[in-house]
Length: 117
Image (cartoon, rainbow, N blue to C red; front, side):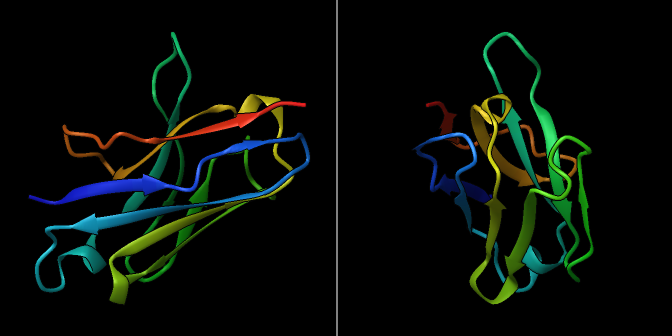
């Protein structure tokens, strides 16, 4: 059973930056590196949305709303994935989750990102 733990969320002013981390545990052998991984986010009353994905080889895809501002990366040796977020806007406020894409049915606790002056 693979579990994901997100960290790095914080309160930041508009225009600021954050780096989120996702640690995968329970991934034996080379399981993690073959997974397409994704960052998702959710705000109250809205469905969880997919923000960015990355294949095991590092091919990335980002939602139009974050393209040019966010960067997704991974370290397969450490079973870890990252989301570098720059030029943050109020609309980026959400709980951010990581999971494979398409996602497992179970989710981690997420990490809260709040963009506010």
